[in-house]
Image 1 (cartoon, helix red, strand yellow):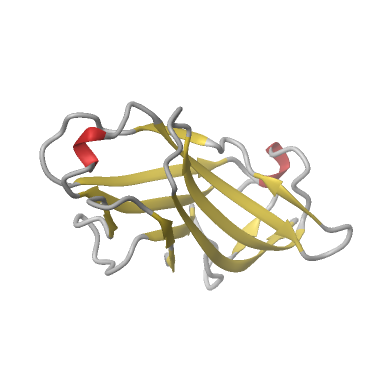
Image 2 (cartoon, rainbow, N blue to C red; image 1 turned 180 degrees about the vertical axis):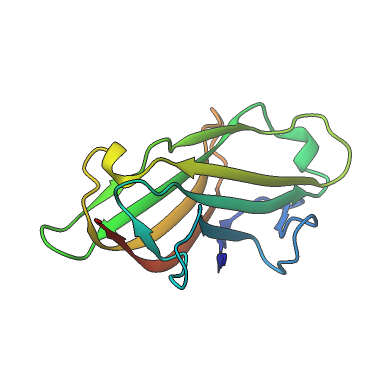
Length: 162
C-alpha cells in the first residue's frame, strides 16, 4: 500500500508554473513512500531494517513560457530522516541527493516522475532501527539563483529488526 504526501511549492518565477504531474492521479505535486515486498498486514511506514528495500517517488510538473528559457541545471532530490528515538538526529539518506537533469528546450509542460530506491537499513550508514520522521525536498543546482524549491513532510516511520 502506497503512502502519498503533498509537496509544497515555495518561490517561483513569473511565467513559470509548478504543479502536479499529469501522469499521476494526484492534484498537487506529491511524494509517495513505498516498501518492497511488505509483510502483511504492516503498512509502508513500518520497514524491516535487516533486508527490506523501500522507495520514495517524486511527482511534479514544470511549465509556462519561462520554463523553456531555464537551464541547464539539475534538480536535486533529497530524502531526510529525523530520528525520534534516542539518540536522535537528522540524516540525508543515500543515494540522495539524486540529480535529475532539467529538460531544456522541450515543448510544453514537462512531467517529472522519479523513483528513488533505498537499500535495506543495515546497508545505509547511520540508519539504526527506531522511529523516524520522513521529509523530502526538490532543489536545483543552477548557477543562476532560481527561487524554486519543493518540500514535503512525510509520515512517521519505524525501521524494525528481525
